[in-house]
Image (cartoon, rainbow, N blue to C red):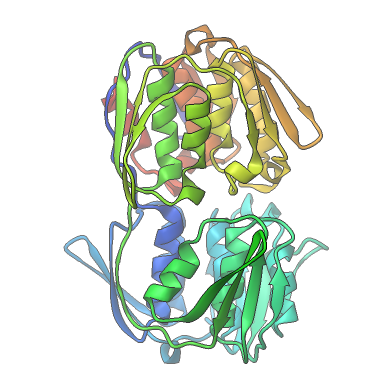
Amino acid sequence: MTATVRIDPSVQVAGIVHTPGDKSISHRALLLAALGDGTSTIEGLSRGEDVGRTATIIQQLGASLAEVGGTIEVSGGRERLGAASQALDCGNSGTTMRLVMGLTAGLSGTSTLMGDSSLSRRPMDRVAIPLTQMGARVEGQGDKLTPPLLVHGGSLHGIRYELPVPSAQVKSAILLAGLFADGATTVIENVATRPNTEEMLLLAGADLHITPEGSSSAITIRPSALRPHAWRVPGDPSQAAFFIVAGLLASKGAITVPGLYGDPTRTGFLTVLERMGGSITRGEGDDLEVEAKSSNLRGTEIHSSEIPSVDEVPILAVAAAAASGTTRFIDVGELRIKESDRFSGSLVLAQRLGATAFAEGDDLIIEGLGSASAFVEVELDAHGDHRMAMAAAIAGLVGGGATVSGFDSVATSFPGFVDVLDSLR
């Protein structure tokens, strides 16, 4: 993968795309395998650099890992794990850092967590606050606790914690720490986020219960020893979103993406695209197949609660730029603290494609051009953000072409992205 990539336009885009294994599930499969008392297997693990960081870290903490015929085998157990003498390098992966904070909070000793220049600008106070309430001590840089971090772990006690903003990563860190805590730990969610952690903890034998509380839900975990499990990682819907939008915006053709993780918290972008007039056919269940055909899209209102992680906003911004009418993304300020400032990045990308785009507080408004064929050739610096790079590449493919710098970041989540793109021409 090179630092700058040129994407030529294509009138027709068609084919079948197999996305990498779901990143969220891949991270969690590795961590739960490390905690499981015995040998777990993982099929379909994402081979992106972000997941690779988690794989390296669980070995530094004491688990062992081997690959046998494409299947990953992890031998773990809580008795094997302990704070590492060397720094745990999370690279560009915020998921790695936040989840490992939860795990290392339960281990005796001090763990050092570091990241690249991008990750070192991202605040970790949202995770540190509940972990500190549980009895851990987290040191970082400044009031927002940016990395590098020191996590002083050990004796934890259970807490009841209401998430101030929706975050599957914060929830997961608390639940992982709760495995080691004295008493029950409860996380209150007012907006449902991806349920991977609690689903997988249950499969691994954790003492975990989910209870509705009005419009919210309470997830309670008690100290638990995990058992090994045979994990199968489905395809990543967030990665599929790029190609589904390509299928909708291309002048001719259709894209099919099989084998996706189908939980509703991860497929909200499909509902949004259907509401915009997208011709989408999808199956049901966890093993989801989606087909997207060339469509004329129209603007809509998109609330952040429809896509709780807001990961799909950059590519939805491309769809909005091609739609007729106005699209308003409501309450998406969370985009500002991702791998880059995706709020500004999405606004700039839409503008450079020729659309009118502006901000009103935490809302992003895009007045579309009516068709991707109206896109002008775009140049964009992705600022080391894989999702901004891939969104710009898709816009170039279905529009007037694109030159994207900072494209090497795509290797963190989707090695081979350009090769897949070229296969659809």
